[in-house]
Length: 161
Image (cartoon, rainbow, N blue to C red):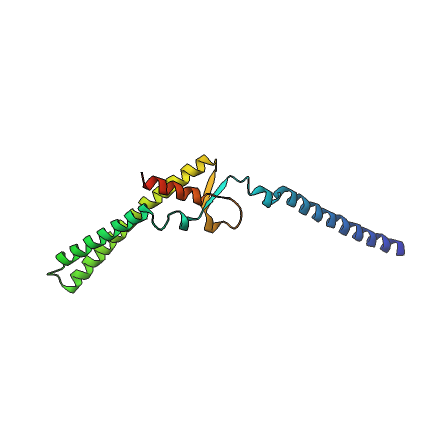
């Protein structure tokens, strides 16, 4: 009876050892498959752009966009004043809401123009550097090739032409 209990204990120990070795080997394979991220980053074909830094503060594109927005705002103000002169408060409120919606559409149009310029500059730089993917730097925790400076130069060069 004692030898039978000894065999069961040996089987349990052997099974635990095999399970432990199996878990360690799976972990080792997983670590080897992921590689070293420090070595992988420089050869990455993923680019990152800090969108808050692509336009310089004195950017001609930003100045033009701001001028367009201010002109549209002044035009809407004048339009509201001329159309609402003989209206009731309720009609004025309706007109105001309508014009606010038009202003929102105009703002989206202006922003889309800027975004299209940024997208074009990012695309040009990405093609030059053979990058297959470019993402906003705010969503990247680690890695990627920072192309913010090249995109900013491309944008400042294209606005002066």
